Image (cartoon, rainbow, N blue to C red; front, side, top):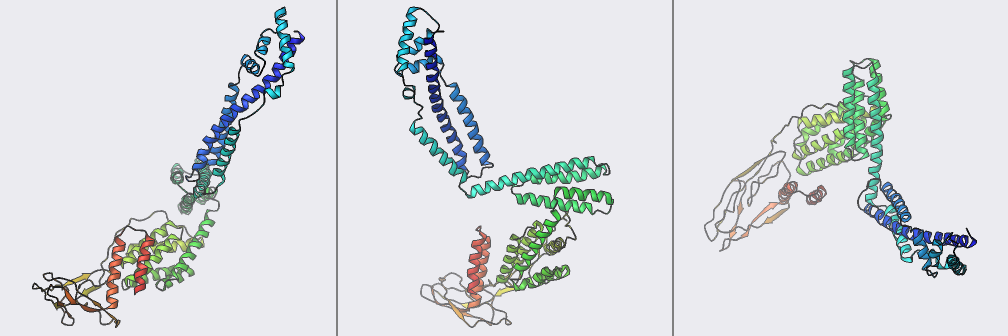
Length: 525
């Protein structure tokens, strides 16, 4: 190989390296732009939609995109002939490609052509003619997309927080399921347990596994573990089992939930303190609060019985306040059984009649909570069948009136109305008459004037006749009354309050809005 051949080949190698690098970088940047666009989509979506393991998804897209871009850019590189033609286009006028074809050929014509090429390549500035340049707009796009995707990754939003919780939950779920699976294998290998005993324990574990796989939050998993812990503790205390088998179950319990008992005790103490504090705010619940604080189980029974016997004699406002207090208390605790019991008894209080079933359920749940705080017992897992009970209040409310009215047409009306319901009840017996009230109840001297607006032929007087009460109306020629009657203020507010409560309870509106409406009427009392 002649010196001319070597000179041309060396030139081509240097020029082709720069050319390939420039082409590779430009193609790679295009691939990188596409990758960043694709990765920015889930990154920005994660700001408003909880996406599980968004960082893993983002990094995975980047890595896959970079790999694809690299391979694509390598495949796109031209072969030697095309490279020579591209270099020729920079001012060599096909001399280089022709000279490369004549490498190793010694004929005069080839030598002359190669000599001509050699003269041109001596003055050919490779760095100037073949610059390594990436288009400015591509660089701007890359920087912009990096900033956008980074913002999507690092800005904290509610969706991001929720996604983080999901990630923690999934991790905790995986760890917990692995522990349970390990214990299932351990139980299968224990010869001291009979097949039936093994089957029974494994069924309990499998039930917990199903609960965990459907759990949405870490707290749900903890509750499932807590239930499992209680079941295993209950099984371990079975007197029919030998001490050795009891120890085996205790070990299984500890391996799955090492701090289960301590955590239950801590939660129970927190729940007990919350309930005692909440109930102490209501005079009607003070005794129950005290018994809870003292952890007096007999006192809890007595306090609940007192509440049950007294609730029917309370007014609607007091019932509503106590019911709300019980409901709020149920929202602040972790114990699911106690939550349910408090919600049920809250409804009963509102209706003015606590059922025996709900009283018993609440009592057992509260006493079980006390046991948990002392670490002396575990709640049973089996629940008896629920029996529905209904009660009918014995108090009656009556409204009574008598009156006469005249109009353009002859108008005469009389009627009677009575109401029987739970609790004291509010009187709905009269529309235009005067209600008969309990003489033992002190009356407010303030009275309000209620005008009658009924016309001629309508019956505008209702209520039970009573010689002790009367109302008088004076109608105009067209049958519209000019005077009505004076009624005690407390009676009017009581009627309106009850009607408002009944209406609100039948509406499908948020509880907070119901409370606002009820508070307004409470303020009028």
